[in-house]
Image 1: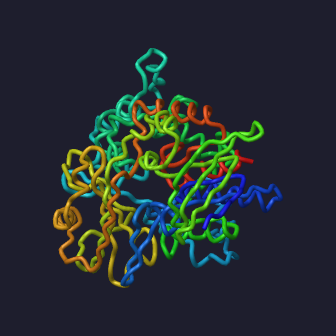
Image 2 (image 1 turned 45 degrees about the vertical axis):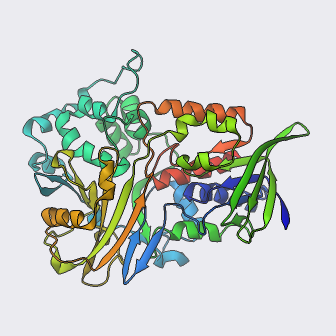
Image 3 (image 1 turned 60 degrees about the vertical axis):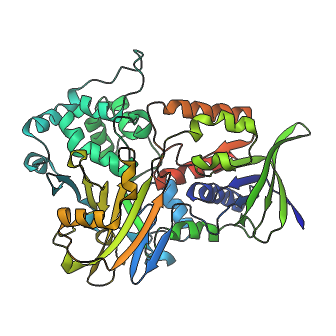
Length: 476
């Protein structure tokens, strides 16, 4: 049986980016700007990396554990899909704001977790930085802008940026571990301009990111979408509640799961460019579709598996070759009495000099309610990344020994859930501009083709949502 489909737009991939594009088009249709679309997904559920497992009173996230709401567009979308925070909202019992203690973060130094300073006095007292390192930090407002690109020295790495502005002490004891926590990457190889554009823009616009941060804190800046203060959210049923809610608000028959795409070809009819797709649906039926716009929102390392024209695959080589190291998330539950550390924070990151088999540990049950049964706690252990990809293969005993050393974990786990991502987080490296140039050239050469995902415009859940919403608006 063959079924013919017609719509304005086809979206391949129902991860959070593809869902956000679809949500934007759905909203436009409600505003009488009719934008029919088909969201085509190879898996049996939406969400991509945003998956959650609840078992025996524990909740384990397979990927991101939270979303930082700092953009009005994201907050508005959550309201639209019934996950807003308003007290009168029906979703009051689903959205969870992070506990106050989640603002506290630990850095492991000399085998001990130390809280990151949260005030100038705390900065003076912390053992994380040497006396000279603290003095060097205070000089940041007097350091000039980077001029290497104008002088032909190319992109500045995040590591060089921090050393130049804050000194090597700050890189080793704070900035480096945070890069490991965010990107699972090597600060020496990440472009500060692309991987940390907000930080780079503070220097570019205000000469100093300390001065720039103060300006923004007191209402400066010209970003109309900025939401202050920002809020960290999750959901009682886990992060998967968000893609599920988006999908539930899409038009009937617009979402097509368990589809195997068989061909993707450009078309030209009456001088109008478009795209023809064929796929096998969940029932084994052959389907075809004709679209003006094609949005590809699958992970970048899976582009080569799509039946795209050979010319497109060749043009996208810089993207398909973009590094994305393996990362494993091991979620463990314990009796609270079997851990000596108070677990009073977001979690702990680990300095590279510690030679730890872990990137860091999230204190998941300290961040949000209902992550563990009464009298128990949940720890999410991250391992792998660019510097030590082999650590993604660590067995449980290696992790348990490290938890004992750093947190005083002595009891046996009462819960276990392991998720391994072979290509976890795209690395916006020093040659990342080549990726952006290749994307722009490919889209320009093939009218109606749009590529989106965490390899473009930011890796966070919030960035992916904003980029998807904006792309959807641009298709109008």
